[in-house]
Image 1 (cartoon, rainbow, N blue to C red):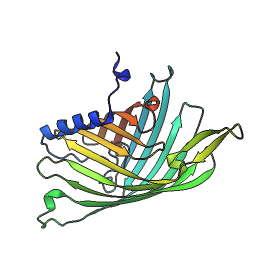
Image 2: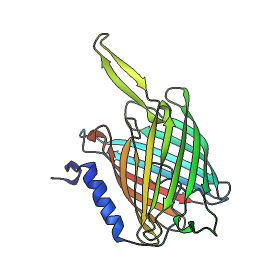
Image 3: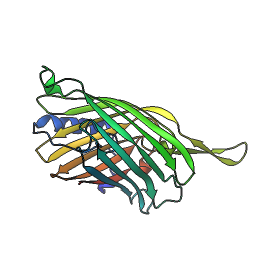
Length: 258
């Protein structure tokens, strides 16, 4: 049986990931503006751009290649604020929702260097993006807020919060109406939960995972390994959507800082 056809429960995978993380302690790497699919508690370095591209690939569910992508550019204004621009849902499928976005992310440390809680590195994160669907010629938005802290000895960073987005980000759901014999298109607009874990293993290598709750295009658990150099981040992961295993995918993400 191939790897891609294995039926692993999400609970089993989360348990294995948590157990693996507890084995290690490590130095903290600088990371990027995203964990995998959700925002992280860091911003781009002041005066620098970071460009990220993510591809999600599935070849096994429907005997044909399914590819979807997300590209993200951010600029570090200062140690707390970055400006962002994005292009999402560029893919090789018939149903399109190609969307552009522009906005910001603000990260506020909650303690100063003299505090006894310094080792916990607590932070508050706030972000927002204006969205425009090129495919549908509609406007929308995304706003999120999160809290984040680090476990001092293990160096594990835990992040969680709430997100609200319109269909330009969260997509649409299709339902066949028996009474009219027509397909109903329902835009998704809802509040959801989001959370993430980042576990450094060495200075350059980390195990990471993040999760969007609900039923929408981003609703999934993504588990990944991350390798970081001074100006680059490479991520390889696996996506388990909340709704159907037919959209499982390999996730490949590359970030370059310049």
